[in-house]
Image 1 (tube, rainbow, N blue to C red):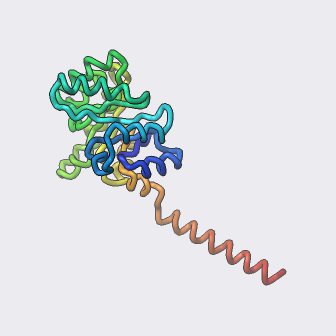
Image 2: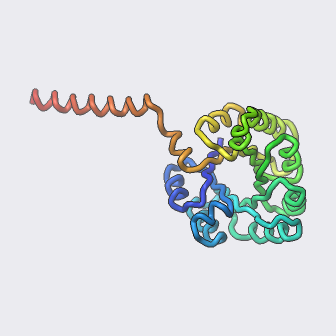
Image 3: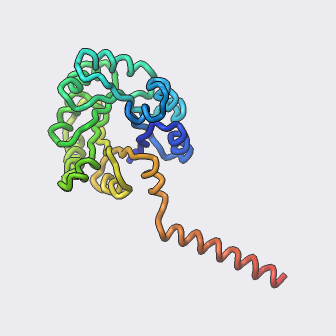
Length: 225
């Protein structure tokens, strides 16, 4: 499964890239606004940090078709890594259907149901961003059922651009585990959630035990020297 980091922080992108595990970055105007930098400038900085071939999602903000179409065309030209992010709305679907045959790669966001994922796949989206955190917050328990059904759908049918299911709105490491269990192709998560994947109490205890045993061995060797 591919791992994306969901951030606009250049420091977080750099650190995640240093791990050698991150396959791409998702971001949006809200995240970039918190960084107090121009939108296009930060997106290009992220593209430069992650390097060639890593997917970087940059989102359209215009809600109407004509303006979103022009915006999507512009964003797609910023950098070879760019995947244009559009919402699952009639305008967003029409923009994807218009531009995906021309080679523009899309991340369709704000998907909450299988019918919505179907529309995005048929319109030519490369990434189907299914939000799980917000659904789980409602207590319905349906979030990963939708992901599982979407994975089955893209594996069963032939869609344009071979879409991949991207689990988004991740709130905890457990949701990444669930994404793996249902076969999602991609998960995007905040940097702090990716950091938590490294930790397990038994790993920490084992490291502490190894260090203690090593020090005891050194002390024993010194006493018998």
